[in-house]
Length: 271
Image 1: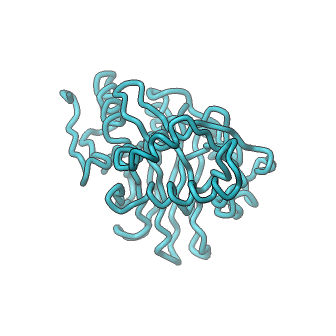
Image 2: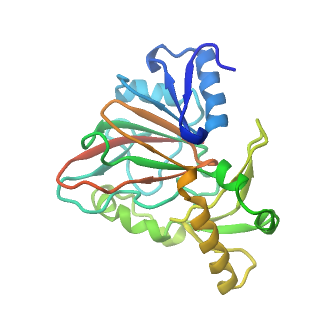
């Protein structure tokens, strides 16, 4: 399956490490990275040496860079969103299980995150929960129940409070209450036909055409199921690492387990 890259799957096949210098990646290795993304949902690269221009150039080989509607991008490089926790802050941007920009009509397929400054290795990990695995392990009665359901995804969902500090600095002025979308809650990967649960606990507010109480009960069950320990891999950051994941397959959640340290990550989302 892989001839030009070395792929080392993580525990329970939740993600995989790829051993390649990104600046040497050619068309064949890019295609194999995409295959690994289809198979494992998230891939990790250590010991890279990317500047903003080379990072964006690499990202564009996976598709069109998407706008992040809430924040202005990095000066000179609007495709890059700076995700940071400052030394005097207690809340982590994006803290809580979610998948990115689900409140847009066409959410980004991929997210890339490149580490600039990090706490000591083992702190500030990003947890990834495979929704291939969560769907596969979902009881059959629930698979049938959710097969044709849709949910409302809102930018004003529970996770919205974690971006308040960044909005104050470089917000675009968009009211989160005006941004919402409706999407099916089961996705099928067109390349390998694997199904996944597409629900973002940080954004979903209700299930369409379902009573409030019934919707809440079902969502509570599914949210709890999505992030069971056996579906999770925690990536340990250090500077100059890159993670790429499919937002159709992975939930993610940055661990807020450090204080007094400046954590800076550069994010690109891709349609």
